[in-house]
Length: 237
Image (tube, rainbow, N blue to C red; front, side, top):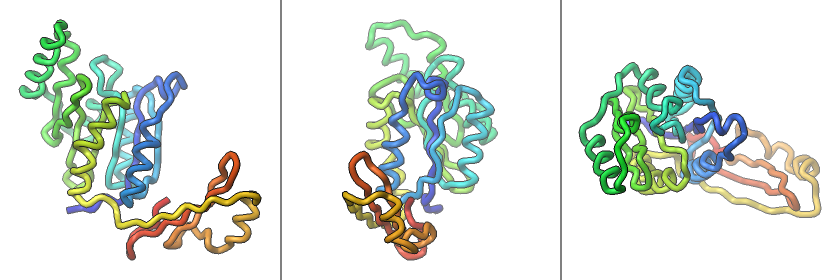
């Protein structure tokens, strides 16, 4: 089974690309994947545009083993993540009876009518498994590709996304073989500028080395991050 060592994170929604909503999901997911020894090679925000989202998934899976998206799983016509993934893998979405029954029951328990538009949230494609959502009406998708790469599509609201990620997705990714054993140390310095610290570190800042050493300027300090992966792996960024 293919090891999942490199990942890209896609944040989907025009509200992000026009600056009306601040994306916190990408940073949270990148931090957790990095802690699990995964090299996160790119974060991208995308508008609600089917060709753009489909092409972003396609490009992500050319570069990485895992593509994780948030957003675009609502019931409205501009929520196009499902359609984009289906177009990418060449499969046709259809209403899943189990999800349809779950949604119908959810609306009944809330004492609300079940709009027909919400039925798209019961869609699945043959290669997808539904990710349960106990906090909303948008199940996620886990898609296994024939080449061993994985797509994970999660809703955008953090209160829904985070428990789905922690309780369902992350354990399954770990079971698949997520990342490589990684050791990280962060050193905080004060009184020296980043350029002077970089000069003193010299060749230690070689980005192709393992361990990798990098500097990060903070408001009142400069951090030096040292990360190493198991022999044969790529250093975590």
